[in-house]
Image 1 (cartoon, rainbow, N blue to C red):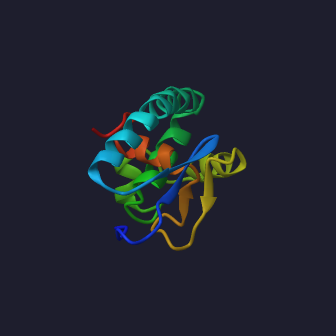
Image 2 (spheres, helix red, strand yellow):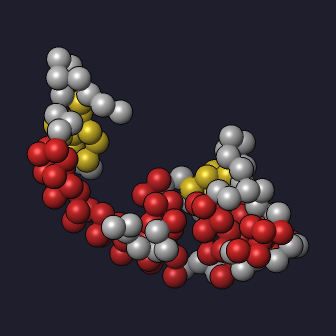
Length: 130
């Protein structure tokens, strides 16, 4: 999304406050510098969440983040080290119950990761793309 020069600056949410900025190269660098510590700390928090999950839950969470196709399809199960059966469904229910995943019929897996930064971290191989 591009902001025209005649528009007022957009406000971008940065916990716990709002920071106004104009969308141009200089402000993006400043915003990146502002967000980097939060992103780095988020990576540590995401790693803790990841380590607290069982292997099947990790595979399901990664598959939902990737959104490559139907969750129980053979290619998705194979690519994420999952097996067809109750374990995958049980892991999905546990992730929903934990608030990490929600139902989203508009996506191929019919679910999505609640935290979009967690999804980016997962798609980046459990590190920040860079």
